[in-house]
Length: 326
Image (cartoon, rainbow, N blue to C red; front, side, top):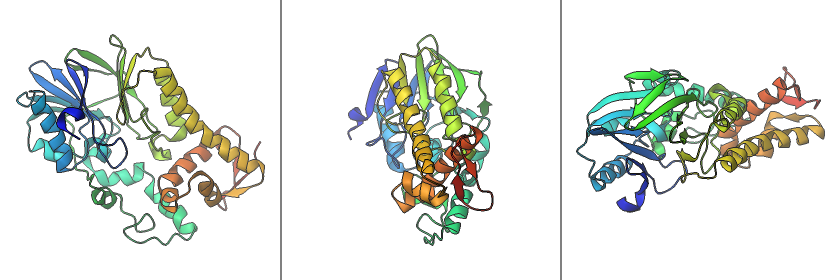
């Protein structure tokens, strides 16, 4: 992809830097704002030289490369959103790094991401089901950071200069963003909303594909609540982290919610025919053993927790069996 094709102009003072693909393990979109005499960024993408070169080449193309970087706001601490920080900081000076206070521990110690991704749960359930995958596969020996690195989207330690919570306001140039806490995909995921411009930086809540979710990151319940929160806003334009600009706002929110809730229906329909094991339900939702391990295991677990909380299923605490549709 040429430099010019990677730059999408949203407004004169706001550009999107797009990766060649919107699918993992490519970077998330990077949004660059003209911010007074400098620039600010929302997310920075993967920790690869190619990813950083794409940002620096785009800034040069825009003739913004000499402007100081005032703020980097991170939607969350996943590698395709903040992995480039280490290389980027070796190239530019920076005033502020901002993310949600819940995400700060994961940015400071990326090894903790295995907890937010519920990798211990994946290994425990994989072990129960006899998963014998080797060190370089998804299985008992799976290492999340090595997995990121092997895919060319490594991650680094980031020390924020400040944190935000829901209700805070972040000013970026001519934009006054309200911070919304939108968990599901990450425990401290944020979306930024400018009510005057009716513009939403959605992060991974909305986009070309439905992001995975895990109980420790908010799960299906948190994801649906985040969509409902966004759905209550007056929005004309959504800027997602993966995929193109979204102009049909209501359709995007509705379809994302429907895809998540469809998994509830599949689980309930299967249980109406009789009780099932966790492994059976996982195979029903996901074809590949690798995907069943992750993200299938935490996705399924988050739906089972949701359905149990709603009184629609019962779980056998002595085994992996799920039954008794009410």
